[in-house]
Image (tube, rainbow, N blue to C red; front, side, top):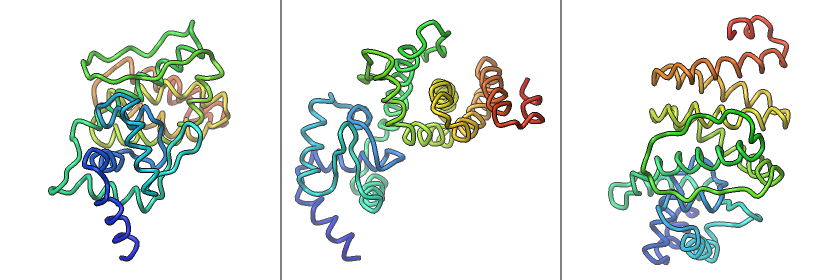
Length: 231
């Protein structure tokens, strides 16, 4: 199509490091994302990634809205197609780095919001990412709300790709703050995924924790039959 030809022309005019970052953006499950998420995908420092993102903005392939970057759904789809192309494949280690970044940052946010609550158990890994940290509860809660759609999509993507240890942990980390925001339907859906993910990877703590949290959501939604099945 004419649109796709225009995207390709803009893409071909980029420097190779910027083209590589653009392809990597196609691996993010939503067309709206934070700097830290893209840096994790790229395996680069946020400062270096910001320079490349600015080049994409200059090429009209990306926009910035305060702390978030956005791209049109059609451009995001184009980037995803490039990422899956055998001619110019994206870094296949990028998705795991992305899951790790969202898990670490969501855990930092949850611990900032509720420092006395038992944290979700960490994962043993050596994947280098630079997660975000938060000065106070307000900043952490704002990050969770700004990244809500991305976090929900990350849970679905992690479970679908078999990274269940990330899926159930991230889902349970974000469930408390999202309940405070009143997003009970989103929480119910993501905790159902968390329960399935924990079951599939055989994590009993994940199964019981997900069921307990899911049961409380059913109670709030006045679905007493399903709540009873969770306890």
